[in-house]
Image (cartoon, rainbow, N blue to C red):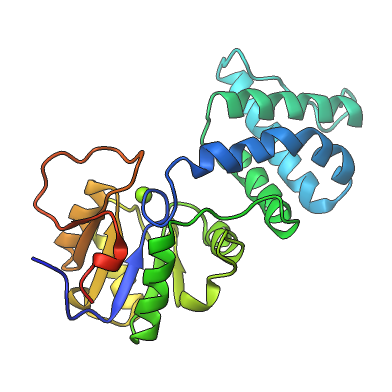
Length: 251
Ligand SMILES: [Mg+2]
């Protein structure tokens, strides 16, 4: 059934507003390119040291777990590594973890911190599909509120929409949700978001490229549209409304 009669739109990011390749083609290479110089320049900053300690602690757990690529870091005590050694080892750990596309908290924390500088300094720009931007503006003009739900942190979401290749889009977004609200493939997450938004699930339109997320939102009672974009995972046959141009989505 075509969507209609909704008051709010809930948008996924990767594969929906933004090419799925963005993180791998832009965000990760930014960190790979800049991390050595970044650590050297900002080593003494408390925020950087917080991330360094988290990465070192993870590396030590990895060594204990027998992960061959991990390099132990002695942060404290009589046998502690010198600052230069710590930096070299932490950098080596970051590099192998990034090559291995490891999704661990310590690495994500540093990446997120670095991206902030990348966006603010103008080296990073959130890539947006033009029709997604136009649709966000049209929904807002028509009195429908737009919200974001992504597995990237709320902080990262605000950066990507705050510094896009179409300028800042923050004024078109009424709220942000990440997996703190629950996993994206569980319908309870969508029930919780509807409650937080203050709308019945039936009055919310969820758009995502991920069929499992679509099913979860549908089960929660939301209206749904599957986002079809170049490079997205083919969804095969599905019973949901699909769109490759969000300006075609019924208002
Ligand atoms: Mg997605």
